[in-house]
Length: 160
Image 1: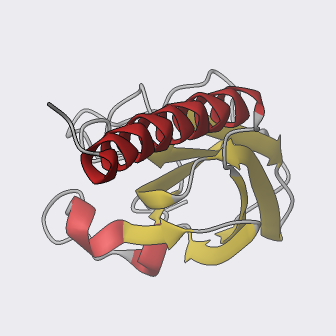
Image 2: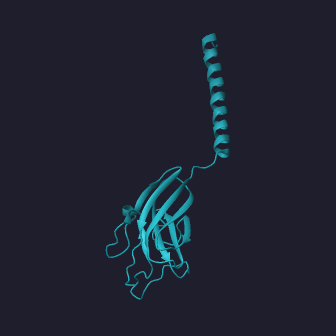
Image 3: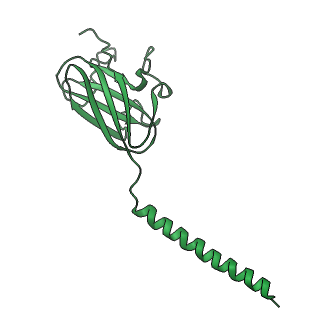
């Protein structure tokens, strides 16, 4: 037989569960309707050699770094000096940026017979390239809302 105190606690527990369940449903609806968090990443690319072609940037995860399938990309027409390229709707997190000056606009980083880039290349944090491409950890940067700004310098590895 249930006493009045036990009945009251059982009733409170049921009401409390209903309130928590209702709160979870309301939270799920809000999350479904709320826009996903995203930032703009403004990348100033310095040392652009000329006005030929475009400056391309790619914002990469550890898995996609140094490859062609980085999830966030953008481009701007090249001009001597600096070009700012803005990548929109990047979820906050840690990424590495890779960039190149696509002078002939073929959307590929052209290389010589030794595999060295014929076009200017650069990485976030001006990550060092010692006998090969940089490590992700050296190029990694944190992207936060609403805007994150960074600068990188293109390096032309072959005499122009």
